[in-house]
Image (cartoon, rainbow, N blue to C red; front, top):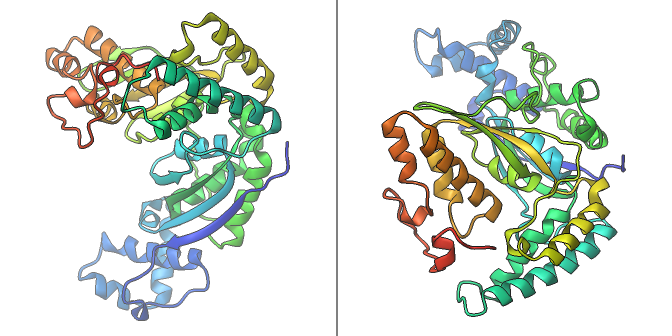
Length: 394
């Protein structure tokens, strides 16, 4: 394991309005504990919230402790914190981003150049040049693909060579209760983790220490009694099912696609890591035997780093409405091609296998690009025919 360079900063937190009316606390955890005690009183209050606030401090704190002891932790979810995580490994970000509820804003490997290892950087730069040339050769007169967009699309595809441990930066906003649960689960990583999370143990330790130093941990909340752990890893892929109310499916996809899919927080995603040498091959070079061979050869050079192009088994469960909302973002020229194609494939399977006629019709109406959906109007049309038809290769 490499030395951790992770830095954690508290950049925002829930505060009281009319601050002068409330007690002062030395740490965020103490303030959120008091806030939880106030919230716990709402369910049984005979009067108003102001009446609760006027109760002696000791009364509110006692209520907070009793609520925690009874396992009723939801009242502590009204308080939120925003953390800026600097140099967090991509896999660590994915681990956090698979839990609900949270908000994240993350540096994009699709549009920016990331910090990378020397052997990755050489291969990354090489393939950026190859993709730029291939795009210009395939679409020489396409106005949509200007120089700036070609460069970004080349980066988007070259990043498949970057390790899943590549450091990134992100803001992560989460409730006080959930943050304490995450802390508790991370403390169990050495017992419950796997070969993937073992490689980020140093960062996990530094993250937990930072939360302690920032006074964000409440020992009585950081004790999830339901024997849960991180939801990213699946025990099995289950069975495919496409019903009128829910669906479940699985498919092969890269780490990069899964990270994109996690943004759809109403849909549940899990992964099964396969110990093989299978990697995603971009469609643009798929028919060029020489370039495919070179691509796979270069993947072998970085496979010990676990590149983001490594294929996984991804499981996906949700509702038909969740899937349509996903399509309204991903069935688009501007979306990553891999997730665009997979979303279309899932909808196609849904339309073919669902027995409920209304749901089948719904899926049939949403099998193409979002700009053709009967219930969607694109605010920024791309005017890229191959993209609209779902035939683009980049």
